[in-house]
Length: 86
Image (cartoon, rainbow, N blue to C red; front, side, top):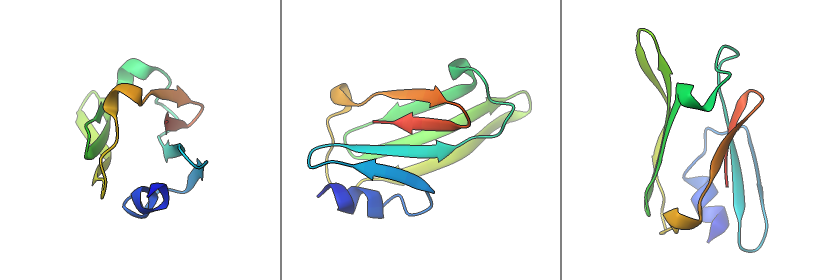
């Protein structure tokens, strides 16, 4: 099931998984240095990540999951030049 979730996120260049968890790394531009420059929304069947810029927002990923996830158990952080969703 976890692998199927990743398959829905085909355009990502890095990910890792265990039996129960998956970590997804979404690249961001070098000028994104603070979490407040991002908008991350995780629903039970959807993930959307946007970078907030002066001239508007840029959608980095807007993807529906093939299976439900538990949003209350999902976290995200800005790690270097990636948004890590876990």
